[in-house]
Image 1 (cartoon, rainbow, N blue to C red):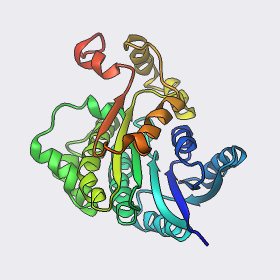
Image 2 (cartoon, helix red, strand yellow):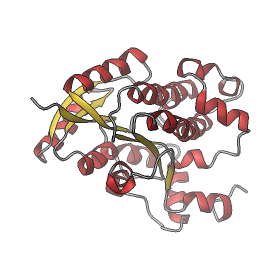
Image 3 (tube, one colour):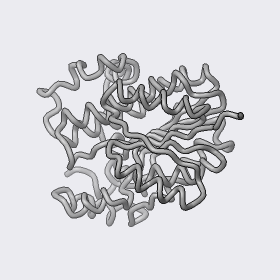
Length: 277
């Protein structure tokens, strides 16, 4: 019996599914999420579209849970792709939780799947435009976020509560850390003949984004949309197109890179109407 080629999706929301639809034809999709009901709902959509899907529950902030997902994936077949789209937002969680899930959790995923990814495989990590609005870090801080062993990351002095006092700052640090981590991990993944990149989207219209737009940060998000060059938010399918490029045959020369796709919000933040007063 020929082993299946597996695409692992971590985070069963709209963005993860949009990328999976474009790269998973003829492959087995292992769709995982912290909440089983989310995985089941996403599996119904993909199954009805003709994909072979199974589900799993994963807590990316737990090494044991991430390793269990790796073992489940490798039992199914050869891991040819990883789409990591799980995380929490500044409106959802405390600084400590954001750093544990979005920063440490991503480091765990990259480490664990980097140990098993098959030659010719690829991964996409969903970061955020927020990582591009953080001021410059020192080279030592960049290196620390990129290369500190996962289980030592949260002990870094720059991440302690007296230095990171609000959820947005924690989120910016986590997402900057994701892109730096991927750059460093690309070296290790390359030794297995595999690639890994990040996408840093702006506001993408998903159920979570709709909650954000109606929440305490909603006015700021609407202002971003109105004042950016494109003048609108993105759709999950637009992120899916970029994910397909990075994971597919047209992207084989791209690894360790971060793709900012925010409609120009970051440009407006640094040089335009969204610049801090």
